[in-house]
Length: 432
Image (cartoon, rainbow, N blue to C red):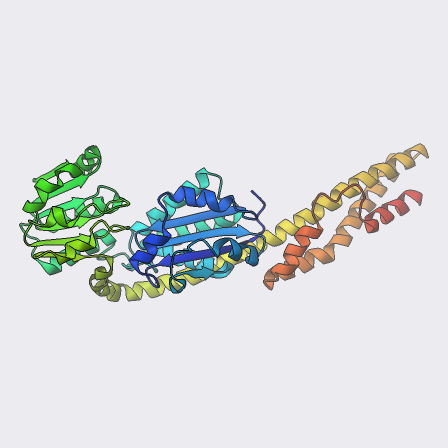
């Protein structure tokens, strides 16, 4: 891992520009493996990836924007060009803040995304892929996400994909007294189960590959008639079900035409990514299938209610974005200045000891020693004062080129020979 130098580059495939199939193509089976692959690329010092049901995003830190762009250029080769958005340093930072605040979600202000960002951050950090640059960016993003939800009303009403799915189902048919089946007992399935219970359905069935996990969700839901089953029980459960919401993490289809062929009037809402429901199911008589795209109609009403709150969050994001840039600029300038002083101090100390040894042989007393040491300190301070001011000015003007150049020029490892301007001054002091 390198220091806090470098720039962030990003790439995203998300619902605003891409289809669900595009997102599914871009996503990988193992998010941690994506991060590990990125951080192993030549020139990449930090990496982070975020995969959800409607987005794939990756961020890396490299020495230059060109290097970052080259690494990410082929990261979603099977996705149509129009669906892939590449982002530079500042755009990546602003987008990350907006995503975590809920401004880029299908359900404006939804709560689930902030937890997904936290988990992705912990996953990347666990394999050593998070360094100073992304640490600050992600901590700022999570902070903004928390503020957005505690200081504004952006998450009032429908607050997640799961609850939006239930709202859509309620629009399509009366859920009061219905039998509902949730397939998948992960975070989204759990949210959906609670939302269905609140809709006053009569019976809830939670199906999952792990029956134990399904039982845990069933126990959390406050309903009299709720049961947990394994996926092998789906053929028996589906004919008795009015509404199905499916949200597994399976790579293949969980519900196919054969399973639903004799189920009669059934409403299916597929909020999984990749999709749980085979496309052939839509052709069955009596079976209505909705996917993530259909949730837009449900979220429009919520979106209109939250627009005023969203304006406040937009302002919050803009302010925190500027604060984050200032943090980076101050840190970068301070790092360059510290490197400059560290190197100068090492050279000064080496040359000072040489000069003091020579003067001691000539009978130098303690007062004279103090004068020479003071002179050495004064020389370093005076010589470095102008470049220190220049670096602080460069930071204030977003002059990253000057700061990056300084970080290279003033590397603490000056080598065996000191810079001539320091050596000459100290040599003169020893001869006086």
